[in-house]
Each structure stands twice: as C-alpha cells, then as structure tokens.
Amino acid sequence: RTIGQYLLEEVKGRIIFVELLSRGDVFRTKDICPPRCDANGKPLPSFMPSINEVNTAMRDNMSRLTRKYRGRISTVNCNHAFAPDEASMARREEVNTALMPDSLHPNADGHHVLAQCVMKCVEKEDGICAPVVAP
Image (cartoon, rainbow, N blue to C red):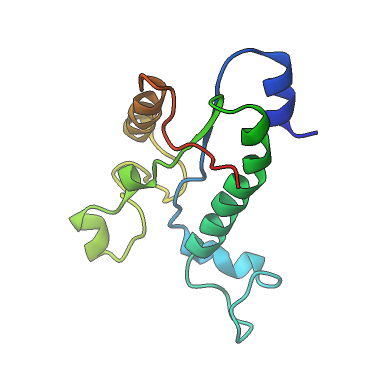
C-alpha cells in the first residue's frame, strides 16, 4: 500500500503531489554512472531525463488511485517557476540559481515561489490543478 493510498483511505481531504523539481547539479551525474549512464556508458548530461521519468511514473502509478478516489488526487508541476533566467542561461545552468543557489535546493525565495505554485492548485474552485487521468 502506498502513502497516497493510505492517506486517501484514512482521511477525507484531497492530496496534491508536488512533482520533482528540476535540478542543475550536473556534476553529480558521474556519481550515479553506472547504472544511470548514456548509451555509451558515460554520465548523463543532465538529471532532467531521470526527473521526467520519475514524474511520469508517479502520474502513471497514481492513475489507478484516481479511478477509486476521483477528484481527490492531483499533481502539480512547478518546474516552470524554476526555469533558468537569462543570467542562469548565460552560465548554461538548468535552473534559476537565484531561486536554487546550489542548483538543487530552493532557498527562501525559491520556497516562496514553490508555495505560490502549490497554492494556485489548492485555491482552484474545482479542486483540480493537474488531475491524474485514469485510463
């Protein structure tokens, strides 16, 4: 039983899963190769393919819960809020380092931006921000 399933069974509220945020600490990809390597056995050039894979798997796995708990489970992806600004792009960074100085963890301003993103989902009248679509 998943955490989401447990919560949906035990409480009457809604669950909003926040998808994994982008990360730009590319220098760490060498630490996970192997097993996470490109086709030539070299470290991946970015964490984004792995992050997208996890977020997709999370949405796919939650779709079965959506059938049973329709309207009570949503996801929100706030990656757009952490997209690199011009200064970060000029340095070839994958995230806005003004919001994620270490390219991984949001700072105080980053947490504020994340909270605003999540609150847009929470405050929607219909209670659905990015529903998990049941097949």
